[in-house]
Image (cartoon, rainbow, N blue to C red; front, side, top):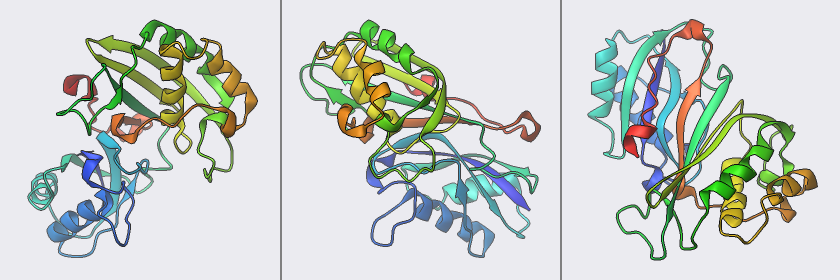
Length: 259
């Protein structure tokens, strides 16, 4: 049987999603917990590998198992064996043609900025602190240059291994709630560090260090060395992965509830 699951995690304590031999990863924690329930080794596939310190309100994974367990047992049995920073939200049987990574048609991230002149304490590992006053209206205006299909070479990590730098951004919104600024972005797929590099450019524009048009200038350069700084991982959340309707996953975007 193939089973799909939703996973929520605080990435502060991990080297990222992907298994690392000498550092704790979210993948390792989830596989150990599911293996305990299945009573055999379990290997999982995720929708998108997150970096060190990056969080998820709903990562989607799948795995195969011959163990006969109820969906409730997979959820609560795994959660009993997971660290407090990771939890299984739901589990559902799924057809064998479902693939958590290759079947995804859209992915959505939220970047959270704590905008005040002194550093945060409680939210230090769950937001990106920016001491400069930020104008979210300038950031929102600049973000519109990035909508649609573009070559995002200037917005990806230099070491990015994706074969093509072309991606399509379907939605990019900037909003504020008191001292928190949110960047919500949805695309067909993302390049390595793409969201964090976009956030870095928008923050420089919001601080008045660069003109609004700079977002487009960086895009047209197609050269990462001419872009902005890579924003901190602590503010980044994977909030939703979209699949074709035929799979009917029990997903809920809870990012708004958290913030």
